[in-house]
Image 1 (cartoon, each protein chain N blue to C red):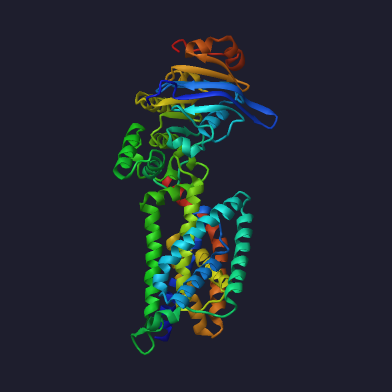
Image 2: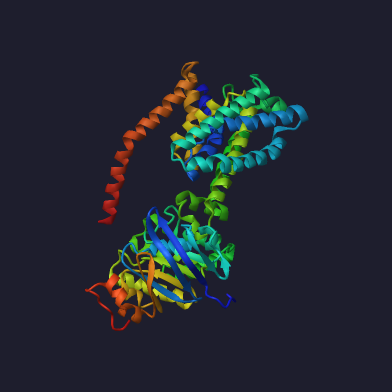
Length: 249
Length: 300
């Protein structure tokens, strides 16, 4: 990426479902290689923001630029081929295909890799996600943790510059989540920018360098994790009186 | 020996059924659409080959080189104009729209060619009836052998294409999770258009063999659809090797029916189809229970 500007720049995003305003003039930027966490109460519009960024929903207002190019009108597949990938909260592997094939089809379609290059990409991704031993297992035979890892690995195989993660830790034990955090940290070290929605805040702050808090379709705080978690508006809207702010943020 | 010959002839007939069924099986496997216009589209291809042979003296084998791409292009257009919209309307709409398409195709063919029965057999000369005699009762038609080889080649080739190639993997991924594949950069609409193009190219090949081994008229499509459908259901929907076996089993059942009584041909085929359908309805829950018990044992 040679552009001086941010990797992703969304300005004035608006989205409503009927009378319900889900995103209200949201500005959001991500720099190349940056890791940003998004927190906020249920219904704050976090997942909708990811869906608008990934191209699943078209926003009613605002523009999205990715890598210096206006991608507002592009669909999910086109954005993915440009390096904007997304993983879902509920993993949906290609059940009848092996783990290897799951990644291979992603590397071929998403990264445009061919033959040997695609296979190399798949092997690297398998190694990074600790899934080499599962390469020949069919997607449908995997348990929840491995499905989550496959969901992550499949998105990674498309060679993204920016990876959008939606509650990848949900439903996992602390130990399992820790394993995923290691993988995500390794992904980040390779220069992939990350936007990560997560309710498990103490897991999130281990990886991200910046935290954004949303409430009722707006961004109410944006900055260093420690500062955001101490913000009065954030405590009021999200953390509440039972707030547990990790000291090591 | 006569009995053996009936089974052998059933095998060859079944290979034709497998050929005409594989397009139906493939399209259902990829898009969950039962294409009720399939038989009519195969007959349309047969008429195109007939025109090429009749007017220009082109052999049907060479004619296929022209007709397969034309039908594939038609498939692409069909997906973009009709099926894509139909798919958004739920399960019933594609059935209705392809049924409507079948009626349109049948009647356009009737307008263009009249009700005369045609065949492509005259265009291939001796091959249409040449055969090898193995014994007094057992003869093998050369065209039948070509059809059997074609069926195995087409179904095997399709299976290999899906299993081993980049496009094949893209099609399988889209078939499994059409709403998800966008996330890995696949445009599912383009994949569906490609799949429909392949399905109609397969229908063109089936139409050629229909015309070569038998006769057809503008309203032959319905019966071909029925045989194709029965072969697919017997073999298990969406499984290509199952379709080959389903076609062959159907062909053998029909020929044995004809062996028992001259009118038994269709009855035996339909009867066998129904028996498989009912057996599956009753046995599926049982098999499922056995499988689940097996899994529990493995887990324990």
